[in-house]
Length: 185
Image (cartoon, rainbow, N blue to C red; front, side):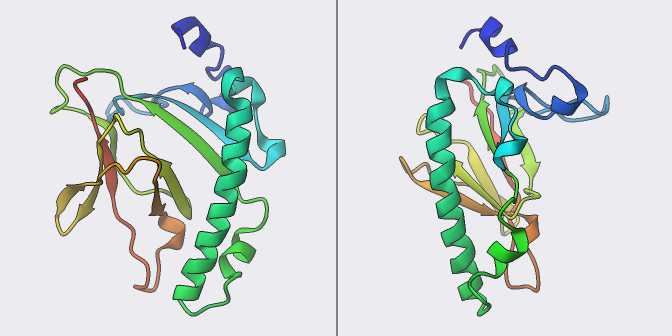
């Protein structure tokens, strides 16, 4: 997608500032920015979608992907609940059938000094679950375990599931900090 095409999907007003094509919203001069461009869109519930920020060429594919990920998410919530010996529908009931779901697609431009920047800075997710489909060309996802960063291997067509902050609690579920490295390719 060329620059002119990308700009068609950039946020146009304050309500859209976190959705569409772009990069970090700057809130402070001291803010550390991610070394990436992204498309970030709300995909569920349907009435919260801003289709004008969805590139036309992948709407149909994204619809199918979202439907399938919703099913995977429900299975995961039930499995987590069972592992905690609570009612298997606990999380589904708590989060409701209108729980927001977002999609984010990151592009990491070449960087002459990848040792100085991160594609996505270290963070945890504020959500309950994050499901990642890694690009087999971009190995950069890391988690912080035992006081060191560990690379997450890319397994073609595999999903990486991160538990978000909403799932941490009672010393039963632990959340890891993760980041994406920059690349020099």
